[in-house]
Amino acid sequence: MMNKYTVQRSPFVVPTNDGKLIEEHFGLASVMSEMSIAKMIAPPNWSEPFQTPQFDEYTFIIKGKKQFNIDGEIIILNAGESIKIKKGTRVQYANPFDEAVEYISICFPAFSIDLVNRAI
Image (cartoon, rainbow, N blue to C red; front, top):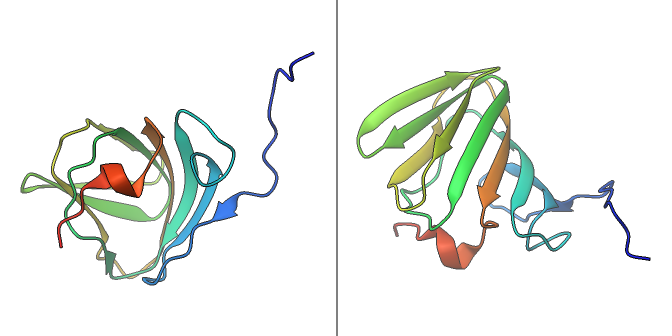
C-alpha cells in the first residue's frame, strides 16, 4: 500500500553565506516534491541580487517586514500579508530594516538554482 502522506520533521537546512536561514520542508533538496516549501529568516540589512525565476513564488510574512523590488516598484509586506510573484518577473528580495524577517516561501515548480536566474 502506498503511503498517503509525508510528515516532515527534519527540514533540510540550505547552506548560505549571507546570514539567511533557509529550512526546506519540501523541495528538491529535501523530500522530493513538485513544489518547494521553506521557512526562512532573513537578518537585518540583508538582500539578494535581482533574479528572474522560472517558477511562481508565494511569500507569507510571519514576523517583521520584507521588501520586494519588482521591476523597479518597491513593495513592503508586513506580518500577516502575502504576495505571489509570477515566473519570469524580475525581482529583488531584501530586508533593509533593523529587525529580522521570518517568512514562508512556496515555489511552483520547486526552487532550483538552475531556474532562479540570479543577476551576477
